[in-house]
Length: 197
Image (cartoon, rainbow, N blue to C red):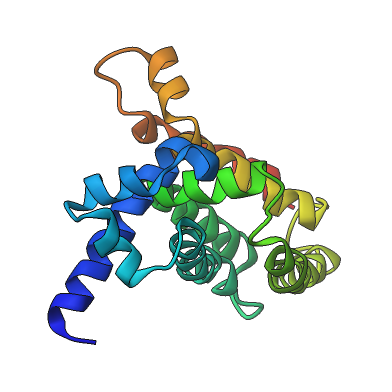
């Protein structure tokens, strides 16, 4: 791939991320993606044969990024710090990658037609592995007795909410307030209390 081909492919994926995260898969069009990328529709189709191919390329790259903080939880670490680090990183990702979060959420809300297999295999395997680590910490008396799967689900819900429902959060808080500034200390306190043995 030439330098210009890499640049154009990057422009298309960046534009598609904006369009898909704003309109969902069904609401997005190739015309919108081309306009956002500053390219013609035939030029976009030169790099990707369809809207589906662009969407799949975005999702393929996203899952690895999304799961990296969960993979980083180490059985050798201090239990509360491992979980708190995971929660903080997920909150940072809501700040740094809100479009990616919304892209993932839209895919799941539609029934995960393009990612269903990965969710029930790769994601499930990883979550089960980390749940066993958490169960071990609980059995050792190093964490409060909580359901490990629901602990992970609650981290997802309480962090990704800030990206996925940004409009709602900002509307409720009112002008001039940065939602994530208040979120971090609140979630630190919540999980510190929840996890204390």
